[in-house]
Length: 316
Image 1: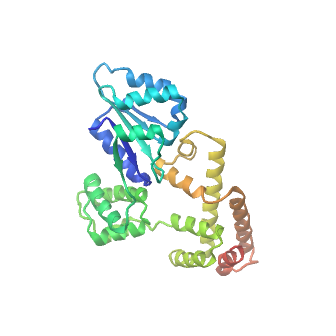
Image 2: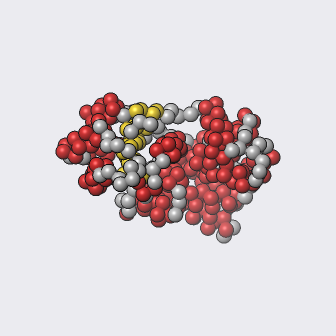
Image 3: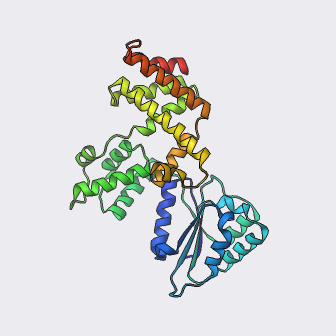
């Protein structure tokens, strides 16, 4: 295996799957895997670890989670890292993660591209997504899907690979010894995921796209018959966005959301993504309006069947 690898992808799940694959190939012990989020703060310690040999020739893996932060290094430290990239010590492996749409063109990146093995993981279209899920389910979870069952799973999970992976784990436990997955198994085991639909409606409301927001609301209301519960779920999503924005503002640790809310890294990624689409003032305004609607419906001042539709038409 190449000792220096640059992985480029905008897809968080594909990135994490590829990293797991490299960890398995390198066979590094957990204590010898170093994940670096803020390189400038820990460079001296990481550099010493890189150049210090292990007593038992165990492999060391250094994962640079944010390659765009490498530009924050001083020239001296930058040159030290470049020397490591050009000639890595025995049993030392470096993985650089790049999630931006385009690769940088700095002097450091030009050197990295020259000496590192580049793995580019493109965004998947519908056919590629279906093929990927079938292969992933078979290789990782020992589950067999055909095109129709894969399509059903993707539809219920809104093509979210993190959710799909969770549901595959549940299906494996549900099926026990059986490996072939049927449509009946999926319907009985996999719930419809409404969260992404909710956040998409929020995004459309904020951007004043009334028709699209109303069309999505109509689709959502077919799955959730209680209008009051729709308002509650919509309010919950807005409150979560507000909470995430506050945590990210007050706590600068890279894994602040995971630690504070006790969520997985994958879930934290989507929470950050959802929170980035709306300003603090807008989300606060939405929450206040929705709380007022909720109060008026429960007080009998507003018909619950019309409440959310009137909100969409008036706010947008």
